[in-house]
Image (cartoon, rainbow, N blue to C red):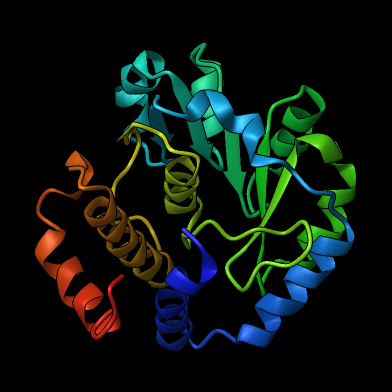
Length: 235
């Protein structure tokens, strides 16, 4: 996924939430000044692998076997802690630094890659935490146009960004432990973000010609938005 392909979806997300592109770009530029390049070929063992994209929903406890049986485990946010507590090693963490940045920093110091995301609402966390990460194991990401060491491989929430990253480095198959789009305990903003996560995963599913079980029952609604956003393009 390159930014030109992702940009129509990004613009739709900005419009839906009222986010400012300039704020994302400012966060990106701050992150760029605090980062060094992360060669994606360091993730070469993901190629042709089954990658578990672990979400942080409570059901992850029941889905641990999916992660344990995968070749590679990419975990969103606090899913890392749940998996490690159950003896499942994590090969990469994806985070926007909002819940367990201490875990993320420690992972980089243990030579585990962390995709640390900069956006308009987490500039203070970017400034505080990126200097504490081991540079050589930190992949800095943005949802705006990439610049310098900061990349954009697609996605919006931690979970779907993890899926897009796995796709970008040519994972063969994606499985989704710990995902729940209908969570009555989340606030309305988080619920809307989960809706977008489902739409983006559906887009990725279509692009990969793969079927993600986690999207069962959600494809028709997701397609309506996708077809509107991507109308007139070949994306």
